Length: 132
Length: 132
DNA sequence: CTTGACCTTGTAGTTACTACAAGGTGCATA
DNA sequence: TATGCACCTTGTAGTAACTACAAGGTCAAG
Image (tube, rainbow over all chains, first blue to last red; front, top):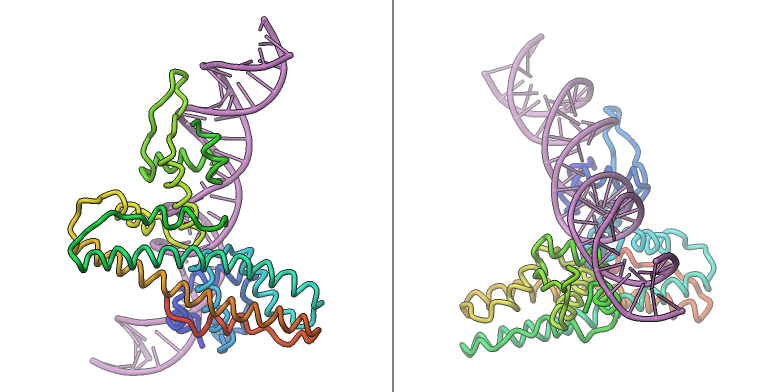
């Protein structure tokens, strides 16, 4: 698969894929005779993961850690455990914040259905959730 | 309250608060005689909201929309409804992705407790979730 | 009446892309 | 055969959202 098709499939632009390669976040793929990058399906999953994790507000440093967790199958259990627990904590805080936001948006939509605009408490919805 | 205290309370750095003021995301507060910015508690909630929303991967454009939803109490129900529904969709997609990630991290931690490292399926966990 | 912690503005640097320029590749079609 | 056309290559420069730093003003405490 060439870079353009991989970009279309994953929603990560060609330029960004090349940028990730320069940064060492994705491996440099083999080249065709014409010096074109030639990707397999593994890169597709990896890029989908990166794009979704970025959308969820994870930094590239954090994503690198998660990818390392995935890549280094043969590392110490203690190391995996500590890192996974730390990531799990971050994930759970994000879920809690998003659920508060979901509740408030749902409340506003319901109020609109009654034609009773009411007031918006979106700011307060997120204000009470845990620290990032 | 001066900018430094507001920064400590909200976790948004003074420089970033001034940056948000330049960008029109937070209002310019009144000044003291010494020309220092003088904030009230409303700015605290607003900045907490912005920080958490950024942490959840919302762009500043999206956050502006959410803040506008909060600021313009007197706008059309149809407009609020459409915007709130669109934001709700994004929030629910993010929750679904994070729950998949949570499940996989939990599975890895459980495997570590058994001293059976197993393999990491973090990438696959996010690969199957909805499009951002 | 100075020291230190705060504030001011302005400018420059960082992260994570994103766009564009200048040119090479390869397949279809005249 | 040639000539578009869509694709690829590298490199450089621009953007969004901060972040850091410099040069200087304010003010309460010792």
